[in-house]
Length: 308
Image (cartoon, rainbow, N blue to C red; front, side, top):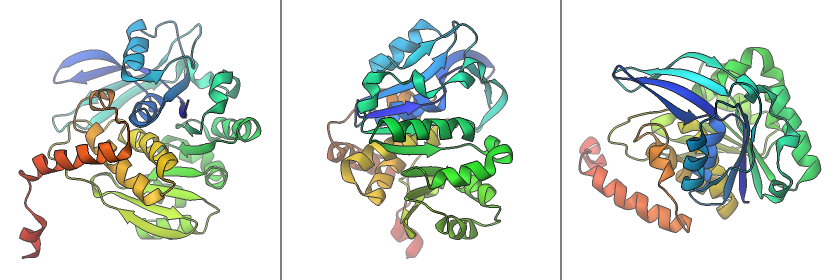
């Protein structure tokens, strides 16, 4: 195994245009599906007895190892999501279910030789326990991201965690909230002062900012003609960034790849766009993106139009 994503897998009730359906979701699932585009990937999570059997098949068919999924008595993590006419997701309710009991010893022994682990959003105390366990039992790279819902209770712990992991990803709004600042510029300056290796601040359609040992770089996003579903884009970015960084050891190059993966994820519902992607090399993926961009660019005004 190259990359293992740790966190929630969920059974989501989704409403779109008046229709309802149950679908597989969860931050760890999106991260693993993005990582498997370039690497062998697995997922560690706990699910309940209500977790549909076809979800295992779906993950395996997409190329994600499922031996780290532990089924226990109880209900799976679940979200109720409603999409408006603009494709924006609104979370109506959630239940963490048995997913709240994920623990380090759920990681299969065979996974401990993985090159890298990504710890998806959970309570910071839980994330810290995984970081400590992985530092003690592996020599792997550790990536971590979080969610704004954990800031009020775990702000100090999250700021401390940044210095304990190799890669920390967060979006621009979360960066301002976590640092207590009112602009992205001030948030970046605040993050620079923290102990860190690599921090990546994602900015949606605008790209991402990379802080590496205090140095700041910018990676622009790619053309996206139509955004269908933004769910899981941050998690897809985190998973593909880690996979790309393993291959390049270059944070800016990894961000360029991850920007493209996140944009592709947004081009279809759920993670359907990611499930069908797999490339033998980053170069092959970049050729795919270039071809895709050329098709999309026909529907965009050129940069020269705005500069002329």
